[in-house]
Length: 388
Image (tube, rainbow, N blue to C red; front, side, top):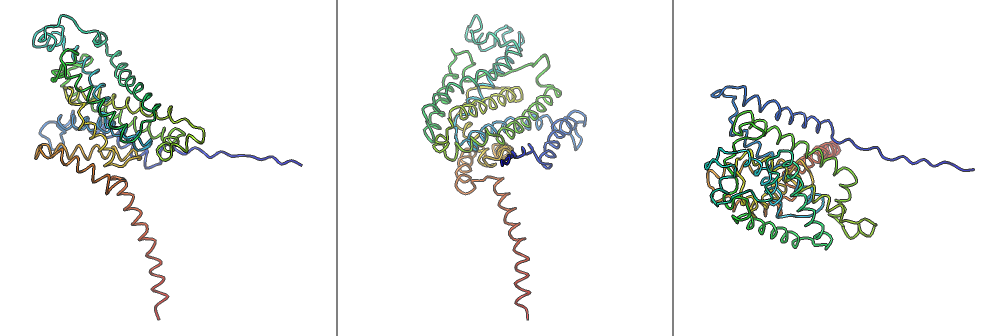
């Protein structure tokens, strides 16, 4: 007599709970409704009017938050600390900056079809790597292909050689610094130390008009929400579980028959693509891109945002990016010479005393409150039993 054995697979969990989808809805309402309405339809001078400065600042913060999410994917989930992700951010920004420079046309200082810095350096024609810079479609493609290709090549050789820990961070930082020195050179065709600036229009629209600024902010906010949902889906799938195993016990994972290389490489390239997207959205809003975006301090800041918010949480890095950059915007006006010292002290303090970040503190407070609530009935019972 044979009995059939039925196996039931666990049901897939929902991408977000009710509170999560409510948060996404509120974020969409703020990004697509409240902020544009307060800027475009509330007259200037009104108490509820949102100035263009704040719209651009919020757009910048959204771009920074995308970079923090990218760092969280590789550091919080895969355990790979990168101190050079500013390179991918800057590459995406430079590709977009090249397109914006071509859109100036003959409205530059020298009234030439060449960018002003090329005329100043007595260049007669565009270099070969500017060939597709007048096409917006090609620009969007190159924004992803160029940083993604660099990340793919570097990641393949680094992960195949099993370079890990501080050695990986140092090599990545050295590569970023070398790229910064290369972009500082005038003969490379990237504007030297001045970079690209004086942008006029994007897709035929004035880049400083209120409608364009609001549109760029909305695109940045939607990109942030979409990136968070994408990473939420990936990290809850098998891909995310394997990344967690790589972070916690890579040797044991290899013993179980998994090759870490494709997973680490996929996470690394996706992280670079997110940073490149953030850079491409960032440049039209700030109006400039130069090699300083590849500086060591900028790459360290990305890691600080993820650490302050809370690694491995997705929501934490977003909060960290907004909190740290909000503090930076205030402190660089009050005491700019102390900002870098505060940034370094913040990174050390969070690493030593607050490893869970802001999200970790909130979780600890909830657990402590729940423990106290659970202990209160037991204390009441003990008091009642000891009473005469």
